[in-house]
Length: 79
Picture 1 (cartoon, rainbow, N blue to C red):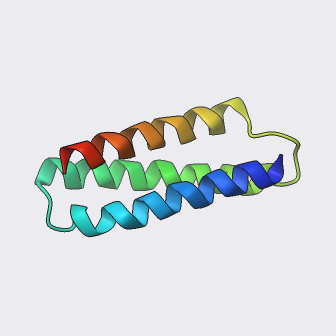
Picture 2 (tube, rainbow, N blue to C red):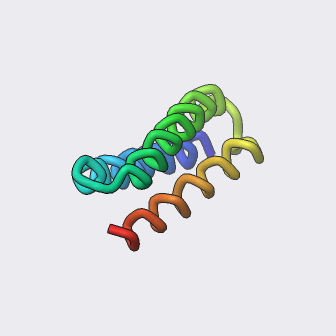
Picture 3 (tube, helix red, strand yellow):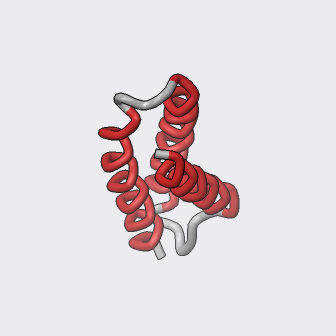
């Protein structure tokens, strides 16, 4: 399961990189949302590393990842 949390973190980072290019020229609102998501992704990445030795992502980390993924999809649609 540790591979799952690391894989999910990698997928979120890849989506983040794709959106970063669009956000750079985006609206102030999009930039503000981006800054908030960056903080959440950093938190998730730290939690995923801590969970690497455990069998599953913690409920909190999973909820954070889901929230980030939904927000990324929202930004994709908005851009």
